Length: 395
Ligand SMILES: Cc1ncc(COP(=O)(O)O)c(C=O)c1O
Image (cartoon, rainbow, N blue to C red; front, side, top):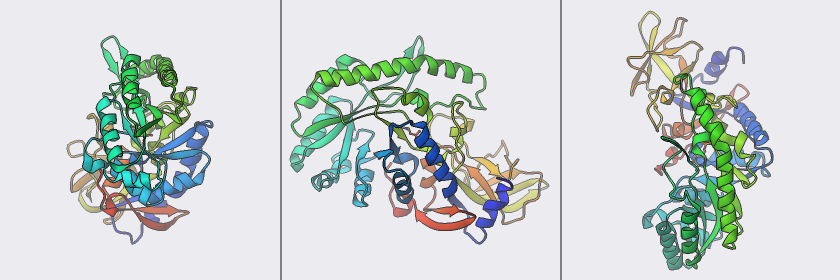
């Protein structure tokens, strides 16, 4: 877009800053592109990368035939979403405390499909105990580890304990002994493909190595997932779904015949981290604006707020990045600050003008704002609450 800065600046005339913005026109394009890239595999929307109910609804309703429910990040979140009409809610990570889990069971009794995740026998014994106590049968899903081991390198994450078929058999035997559980799904998230950028401008020397490791891993991942699915079959279990992937791996995950749904979240907003992949590109649909409140010297302006650094391993790519006006830069000694963010810029910005930043991780933007300004066609459409704006902090 020509003069993107003035386009967004004009939309924000009179709005309070800082604000989070979602450009619905760009979001809709990203949705189209993700649906196309999935090549007919169902998509389960990873809610952690959105964290705003009305945007989740917009995504799901855009292509009802393409989407298959939500991948939630906590049981409490799944219950809140169920209360608001969402269904088919896979909680993608195990939880153990009764107080986290207790509200799930009445919702299941009402007919909502909330699926709980586990990998250790203890997870399932605990779910079974609570299900029995509440007089329900609970759908559960197995999280299998998709990491790849190379000599001296663990290429993957440390989450699930289910690496070998023998471990899977043990937990399948446990689940068989749990009368109040029904195993309906298997999830194998290849984090080392989906979650590791391979075109990172801050690690140029390492990018080719990461690409090579990814290439060497993909076949192994697909074989492993298929053998895990077959083992479930050997136990007489026909799974409703086999989930794999994330935004960063759609290109390879859709080729795995054992997978029938791909998890996607970040691609919809397309934060800056997702610019750093070789195989795909989306446009920034979500970002934030902060106001220039000072000009401390020539070409140096200072903005209020803005230091929304992302979680995970430390790296320059986890910092927010100013993108409009073009050529605005952070100042290395300060970067994006808790209350003050200086920027260098050779053009003219007036005091009170906005500067637009892209955050690094998709869902974390919504943890910083009570609401999001939805814009389309050069206008503000609506302000909608984030999870945070609804007073919900799940993790
Ligand atoms: C289990 C699981 N599946 C899929 C994803 C991918 O999500 P996204 O598309 O937002 O990268 C994640 C991200 O961490 C995840 O934990």
